[in-house]
Image 1 (cartoon, one colour):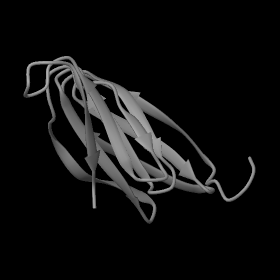
Image 2: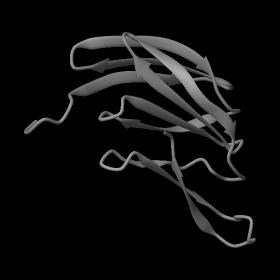
Image 3: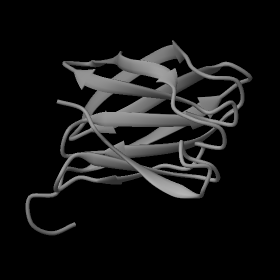
Length: 115
């Protein structure tokens, strides 16, 4: 790796409604478990902010924050039907969730930011 990019590696195990994560951020272990939406199937990690995003088939999204050596849930809720794809831009901290039907009834990309 080059520059000041954080080194992140880890394992994530997803069950029917829970996730177990073992993220290693710059040689610091962050084990933990959290209840998430039904059938979690997509994760994204923002190494700059230390956030793990978990999207589920049920349309719920859970965001876990790395604090010290633990992951803590900072957001969990229903985002929208089919919101089980996630991309994160570590430069801006924004997360992107493509959905088949937004409030307008048309496909859209929901853009979220956690302050």
